[in-house]
Length: 106
Image (cartoon, rainbow, N blue to C red; front, side, top):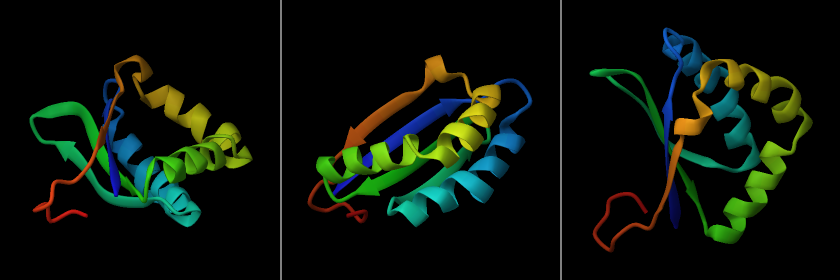
């Protein structure tokens, strides 16, 4: 399994709006396409931080799903414009992770 830890900085005062978009549109859409969303988090002491973790079978599946999701009409026309208003895209940190043998997440 391949995990992806994604850390976003949200523009001032927009984190609640961002979480709503994630939980009502982005996560349901991505899971319908085959992405496993392991978790979605906010940081109580950092009011601009949003973190989520996704799981893929392997790098080939990740690349295939990226293409299907991010080139879809729904993403291009609906999600991308909304997310651009809320995310500081230049601060996104995306880390690929592989579980260790004793990790509970696999």
